[in-house]
Image (cartoon, rainbow, N blue to C red; front, side, top):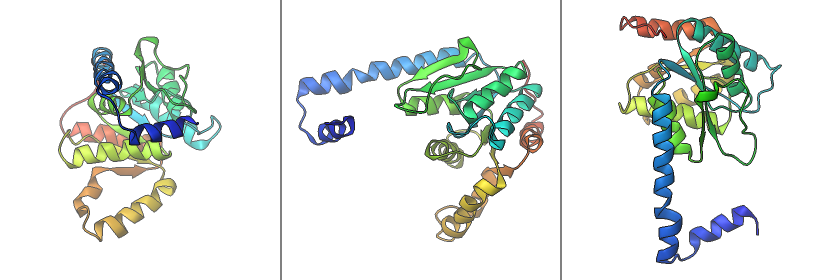
Length: 235
């Protein structure tokens, strides 16, 4: 029996009260521990921007190079960088932050493939999570902006989590920057042609994010956003 088969059978099987206490109730304490550890470590990092993107992007890919440059420029403008702590775009983000001598945070998640620590995370800012939802809380709670590079399902999950929380006013209207007109163009067309046409979202929701193609444009959008509030990050 594979691990997937076991998980499916467990969901459909009748559980005893002892199994519920052991497997479900006690998991609360592990969840609490991840929240406490995250809050304690990340409350000290200062103004930061999360960079999302694919773990599969290779170091010679233009998007990797662009993500590293964005991260570097963010540090030169007073921002720290938060990534998922793994390879690909995440590695590029931490590498750029390290090159810029800025705060370089990694929020790792235990996965059966792809994910492993990259070497560019600050040693005291490398966190490990078992639970995706705890990790996403940390991204949102301690970020003053979001840079979304091309990626897969995980990147889409992180993007729409941030958009939804802003749309529903659960968090402030922090800037969201999608990088890569060619990559994101089809998705945005679908949002316009389908979601807006079906009235599932409003036309004003398109203003919740900005699409750019260069590192300068990405950082400029963040700076302009905070200039409206006469705010500027610093360490």
